[in-house]
Image (cartoon, rainbow, N blue to C red; front, side, top):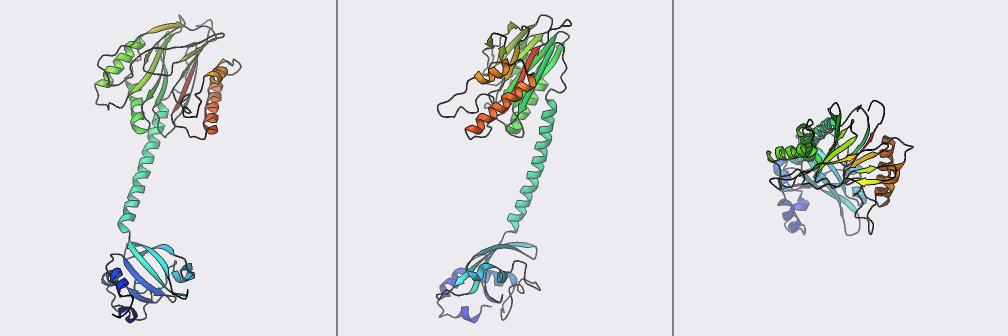
Length: 378
């Protein structure tokens, strides 16, 4: 039942009350003493309260005392709105309390709108639960991906180091080195289009599918291409792979390329050579791609640098500037530092450039350095 003050047919509030009665949200008006002087029809019906005489706001909600966030103790009666949440009969309400300011500026009443947000809260809890599960799954996938990277590499006649810096939890980059047979060592670097879960799954495809016993990198890549096309992969997905095999007896490096646009670099004492090689990415774009082998001699002191485009293309949007390899080459030529230290210095250089232009890492950064060890046993 409405307070007589509000029920008067001659009241100038009649039109406003009709609007409030048409609302699905609960609406109540309380005075400074928490006495309820009005509830709208929706609240009246749901609570079964038809007599407001002297009832406090907490009483009509079935409580024995004011709630912790009682508006009597808030700044509502000083002219400021206040938002809180209340629980009633296992239902959660968002409560917005606003002052009713009289013509003379005094504030004796506050209007409160209570919206049932129980379903939204349940959905929020479910989303949080699913997000926690997803985050746990991502962490497990990240650990698995890290486990697939080379670990404790000890190969005859070859020094090896790598750096692996994903831009997200999961990476679309992969680098690997392995023994092919007693005199051959294989190494590849790959970059999958995109980032995240789908890209990381394709890195696992590379690891599990690339034929590590084939002495021809081009034939291994062709077989990888065919197995990729036997699956139902999206046309927008693709993998670029540079794959080479080092012969520790002849000290030759035979390599092939499946669309990897970051040509590996051989840094010698007095020379720099990029290993350019055409080739279609591992994709379903064509039916019968051609891959080729090429062989180069690795001399004493030579370093082979492999990398993905995250090393060089992060700042291509820097106005008027495109990075050169000069500083990276300067680091790689430094014979006073070991391979791992060289890669760490390159990483710091990349991140310094990103910081200077005020951008975040937008791509995975993966690098590897290989250097033949020439000794009497090699």
